[in-house]
Amino acid sequence: MTRLFLLASLLLALPFAQAAEPVAVVRVAFDRDGVTATSVHGLADKATGRRVSAGDPVRVASISKLVTAIGVMRLVEAGKLDLDTDVGTLLGFPLRNPAFPDTPITLRLLLSHRSSLTDAAGYWQIPLGGQVRGILDDPRAWDAAHAPGTYFRYANLNFPLVAQAMERATGERFDRLMARLVLQPLSVAACFNWDTCSQGAIARAVVIYDGEGAPAKDDLRGERPDCPVTPSVDGDCDLARWHAGDNGALFSPQGGLRISANGLARIGRMLLGDGEIDGVRLLAPASVRALAAPQWQYAPGQGVTFEEDVGDLDGGFFCRYGMAMQTLATPVEGCRDDPFGDGVARVGHSGSAYGLQSGLWLDRDRGTGVVWFATGMPDERLGGCSAFSAVEEVLAHGDAATASRAAPCAERARPAAEASPAG
Image (cartoon, one colour):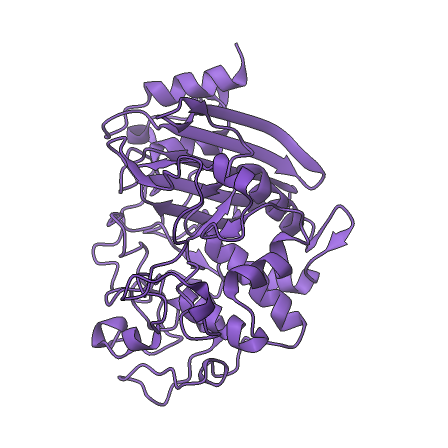
């Protein structure tokens, strides 16, 4: 019986609180030298019956933040950006929490979700020709109770502002800049919001299905999208209207990366190699360490431990966070951030949107890593012993033989999540 069949059988047997099994599941394990194991199951496109593969591009949701941060660090190394400068000088307008007007906000605070921004006023559906700056005038965009640098609140809005700083520093459109800085040097065929992806990649796009099995994103039918961004208010999609530093949300730096599991594995291998892969150095070792080093660790009253923009309302998912890199298995009461169940402090990032759940996790001491994604998932992470979903926990273990040795949830020690994650 193959590992693929064992993994598929276990996924079918798990008691998920959802309408059906995942539509597609992909897992790629790797070390510094290359891919060590691949498991795939299900369909990339139900309408055509096309099977999913580890080479098919998929919208990986918030893992995009980690890849964006790699681009930031390349610009930091080139002297184009500074992590600790008042980011208003990079954006060309003041960025201040109205409740704390004397406290500067930096790129480091944006990347580590300690800026005091929230997603309550929106963050992504800003049309071509619009400006992210308009959202910042809405009081809901700000946490009036906590000064920048004092509190962790995961907010997607941070990353359009990061992208705007990158555009203003270089004069380049964010998706093309990321191709130049990160994707092309790593020989990874990927793109933000499809415009720079090849027709072949578009033909292999993974359709993202929601928890009911309905298409929710990237049902392309082999055709390039008519508009890869939110059209202008008059319906126009002429990308010549783009202007550097006006609308960092256009190409979805917070979640819009389309990349295959194999492509993410190359990025993981580069990080395991302290910035180098197959003789190509992308980052200095110090930059990789800076991304991974926790800027925040949970303590009561010092942060929100779940993402408020999605359905995950149970605490303990985020407990240590660096610059777009999360650290797992935090040994603190209230933390449930260990889908592997072994206490190892892996680093990486998760993703969850439109019915997809994804992960890129690295054990830097052992030099190993894993990428996974599943489509057809519910909005909430359900069924797991940790704050992750049961599907993700199976993928963390890697195969049925390993997963079957894990004790049932009821028999495992499980710290209670904090009663009020907002402190």
